[in-house]
Image 1: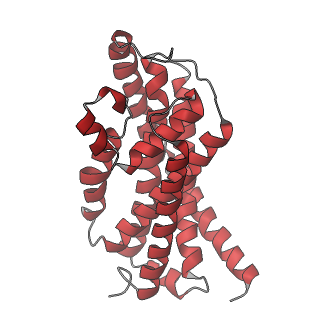
Image 2 (image 1 turned 90 degrees about the vertical axis):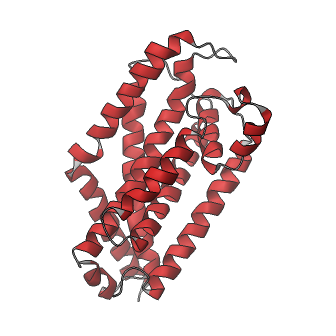
Amino acid sequence: MGFKRQCFALYTLMHKECVRVVRIWSQSIIPPAITMTLYFIVFGKLIGDKISMAEGFSYMQFITPGLIMLSIISNSYMNVCSSLFSLKFQKSIEELLVAPISNFCIVLGFAGGGIFRGLLTGTTVCIISLLFTKLQIHSWFIIIAFSILTALTFSLGGFLNALFAKKFDDIAIVPTFILIPLTYLGGVFYSINTLPEIWQRVSLANPILYMINGFRYGFLGVSDMSVYTGFAILTAFAAALFCLNVFLLHKGTGTRT
């Protein structure tokens, strides 16, 4: 298969996934916007005014990067998971598998759609946050890098979930019992420095902690963790998940009966 043909196939699949996100805007954009607005009101205004933070930042400023990252994580994951599983459920994935497109491009095409939705909802939440607090930017490079890497990592995670899912209930198991708990315990609403020492050590095993803190560093210039460690973890997870998805797709795991 020629390189140009693969590039065109990748562009077509990625374009289809991005158009799908825009077409179902009432499901992909509005719900997370409303949810995050409620977070800003409840945690930022009603509770945040009673909490003092170090480093000269308000509690609202502290949680804003975490809420943006929370939106990126959940939406990039669920976009790919629901899109791929819908193809499996409708049996239309067979048309994709027999098309002249490599497994490499299939995984990358779906991941592109997940990245698009994750960054779109993250930008929406960022705009909403301006109604409640003043954002400051410490490093655009770190913000953009962590946004893209995080969206890519969880898009690939959603792809993996969809491969093994056999019914619609299966695509909700990982987000409900693994993703959401790890996200909320990843330092969105608190600094791990406020935890007892033993729980600080336990928290270090949570990879999302490094992602949220790295992203927060891009805004505020402060982080509980090393930004370089966060980059390394994100890159390693993304590379491992990508290779695993391509391998499983080649084997026909979850796509052949």
